[in-house]
Length: 111
Image 1: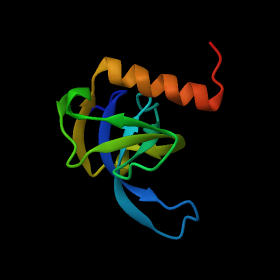
Image 2: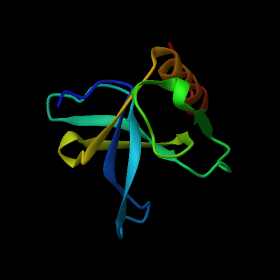
Image 3: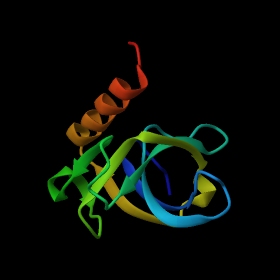
């Protein structure tokens, strides 16, 4: 499977203390590099996160998520494509731009 920016995949998501993990969806910010590593953002079904972009079915170019979801733009990870357990689908270009914009606003990206 070739991964692309905006893809939503299921991976064993590490807890911040690295003691364990839980399978959770993430959205890719960019394509994997030559080693298979990619930047991604966590996706949650919990609405109360302040640093999050809401996703609904219209934000999906293909596939779907099982529940209403939010991209946590304050939780960025570098993971490897070998961890991908399932491919849920892909965000539309508009939704991915919204995620990038919110992420860059929070992280202080400069163009």
